[in-house]
Length: 149
Image 1 (cartoon, one colour):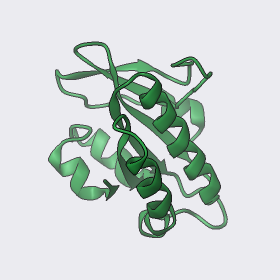
Image 2: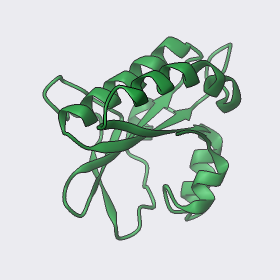
Image 3: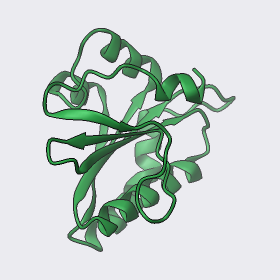
């Protein structure tokens, strides 16, 4: 799936959340997540990145960017990484978890604000859940993810 197509997918957010941005800047540091989600108080509570590469350094960068954004906003929030698997060495939630865990643990202990959880999910599963009407960050969605928290 192209980056543009991913940014334009219809998300099942329920009445608590709404899509805020699709690849545009949020925050002071030119941070451009693929999608950002806001709550009823218009605070970003979740950012979503589609990752078509198996380069785990990219995922570390996505984690640190979202963490810094939440710290700058003096809030906490979540990151969903949708693993597209379009590369020769397609990323998988289980292997990505093992690689990202020490970095997540490091940033989590450094601040009372910042990244609260990272959800890793294969893009095919992400799309099936959204097309099937499953609420983003609802119990069925979370059960399909590998979660860093």
